[in-house]
Amino acid sequence: MLLLSALAVPIGVIGAMVAKALPWSIAFFTDLSFFHRFPTQTLPPENYHLGWWLLLAPATGALIVGLMRVMARPRSVDNRMTGSLPKRIERLQKLRNLYPEAAAKCVRKEDRGRERYVKAHFAVRLDNELLYDLVINTDRISNDDAVALIVEGAQRFFSAL
Image (cartoon, rainbow, N blue to C red):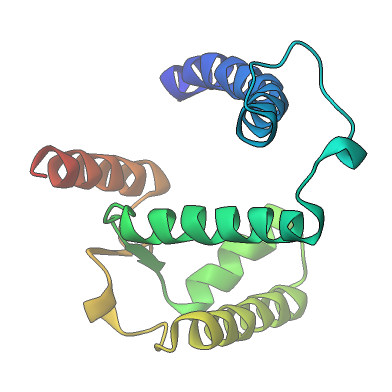
């Protein structure tokens, strides 16, 4: 956990630098492609000479980036954490300091929402264990052991690629 926290700082710094560089790169490549020059300053949009054709440029770019994202998407490791309803209710009751009836209501509501989401977006049943690379029964395995299993499984999976 300490290693994960230590890695979060440089990842956040890199993310901030990318966020700062993105608007600059958009302006740079826009000026380069529309005005055929290396930009020294950003020109206002009314100076673009393409008129209505300009509206197609972002849509075309988004389509190309979207297609590249779908085609280049690496395979992921799909994990499912499962447990009996009584144990899940008990855990939620302790975690949120709820009465048993309130915890049961929350667990059932979350289950229904998760099932609807998976069915709507992926057209599959959530309880189909054949969709997952790793299924962990949280009634028998602690959270720390589950994390260790997931990390080890992901490391083995991605080292084999």
